[in-house]
Length: 232
Image (cartoon, rainbow, N blue to C red):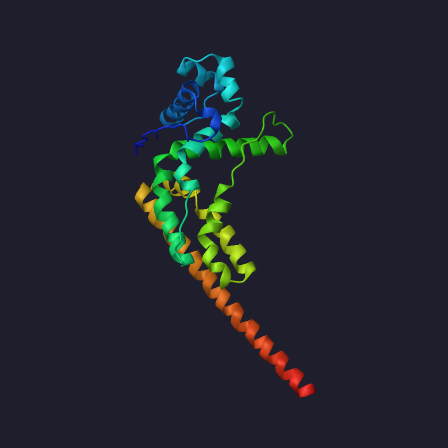
């Protein structure tokens, strides 16, 4: 399915402060366009040539592939990373998060796939002791999901909440698109529907686990209190 990959406007407030200049914006837009069209991570030299910028200037703004992908993803996912909700329901917040941000994942799917590809490649090289550049680190979803789950902190045991947090991190991001499109051949909308269904199922399962744990804890407390009273 062809991607309608409309580039976002790169304003002075976009990503890192060093991307305020016209030259830096041109480099970033060029990198976004190459990845969106070709689906692979270009070298900094390729970006420089396509943008008609000297290599020395390009490397000043984008010293590595990791820096390039970081800038691209910050631009692609800006609204996602600033997600905020005042909904008092944890389940509703998770639903809101998935419904608001998954269309953004779809819009910038090539860029997100490129970031995942780079992270996997560098992880393998790092384990083999062959990595020669600063690695690109993923993980913003941890903070984003923590905000979505915040209302559940008052009613859910920490162990259950942490398990839910980790489980949701598996289904939140580009990974459902990779699995459900590449293996199952599903369209974007169905990917979004299944990801939301999985997320809500995980929340509901965690709520049931928390309730069951509370019941067991209360039974143990009463049994202990009863034993204590009999001993008196």
